Length: 270
Image (cartoon, rainbow, N blue to C red; front, side, top):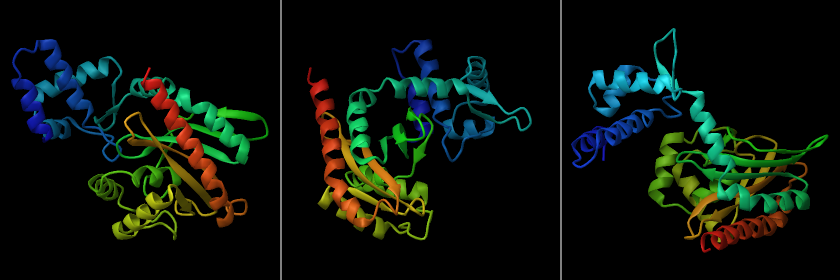
């Protein structure tokens, strides 16, 4: 259903009170903002939603008053407000994935001594839920703003390989398969072939495809229904991560991903 049709359908629903209709209209406005289109004018929002300009003005003013939308004073465009970031951080901090996965992520980091990433798919990219690494001091970082492409990272390909081809093609079209390094797979044919190999062996490899000098190995995490929605990876510099070590680490990364999946399934069955 198009955004215009959705807005019209919401307006036409019977049995809904005015408050519910207003909520759906606000949600339709917020849905207009994307990574690619992070700043929008009133005209842009009117075109995307199909709602009257006076309605959009009223909704945008209300969202701005409560901090969900900010206005650029110079350009008079709008963008999502910092309160949205706060809500997103709260969601990530309280995810079942983060709570149940953390002991396993810590253990994987201790075993390998390398950086461990836990990511989940947000609809277009892989969002970092937790990153474990050893610095001068023992630090654990919960990252709420770091995102990774799906097509050229270990966490991304470990997720993407187990999705419907329609979604794979949509993500490839949205991200453009840009060459982040000379090793990046930049055609849909090459990506699909690589994802088939991921499915066969059960883990994904980022062979300096996202950043020169960095390799990673990632494995898929499944929810209680068996659907892949997240992934975990180990990454490090190429001098410490030759191909032989990638192959050697893969079973441990898979075991960690499977342990997290079992933990989530056990929790949901209670």
